[in-house]
Length: 269
Image 1: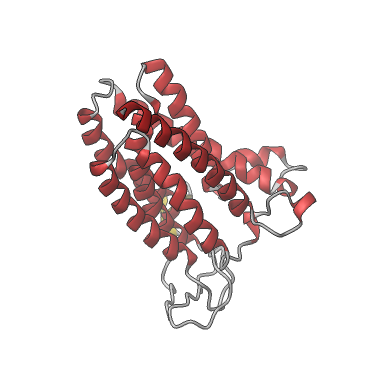
Image 2: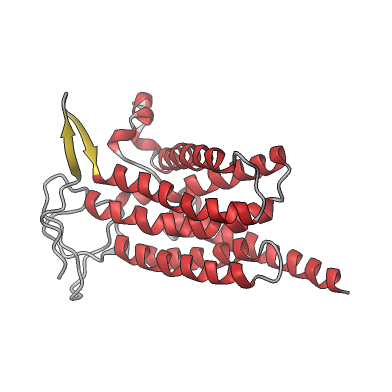
């Protein structure tokens, strides 16, 4: 059984009492390290000269803002009487899908401004995105967020640190490690697809076809209350917020495959 007894959410405390959290460090690494891969591919794809600085701003800003806004939307009851709490990022509370939607939107705008093919840019970014997710989820282990439901499996994770977000002393599914593992595998697969793609957009569509399925399966054993439910007023607690968004992503991916495969076939005639 995994027992993260010594996993203190706080890495160190700076003078003045400012805590540096492991989650924040891993989030920074999750955004920074994949940029090395993006820089290499950016040269191959003849991206603009200022591509990487722009990309860092887009990914960092989009992730922080989008992920926070989606968390606020899904957990509005926490903020309806405390609007200033929305700005308190140190308290935690981010939803990956919100950040993903914001970053993709900003990349589309960037491609239009810089006159770059949007699907070429997205093909470049999604393997980096999956790698960043794998790194970022390790930060969730230290924070105890995104935790799983109780289980008696031999690889269950029991949190014992008093500052952990997860319930203490209860063996839980290590859903953070599940996602870190499948995102790392997905990143490797997408890199493989990128080298063998038959048309621009294939890598992007592969990510949007595979990740939602893996995420939805992982949601089956997650148990954190902050994840929220999709259209809870109409559907009740049938689908988690992530599962509902995953269905929308899969629908969009199916349409994308139909359009791009048809376009590719016509181009070959």
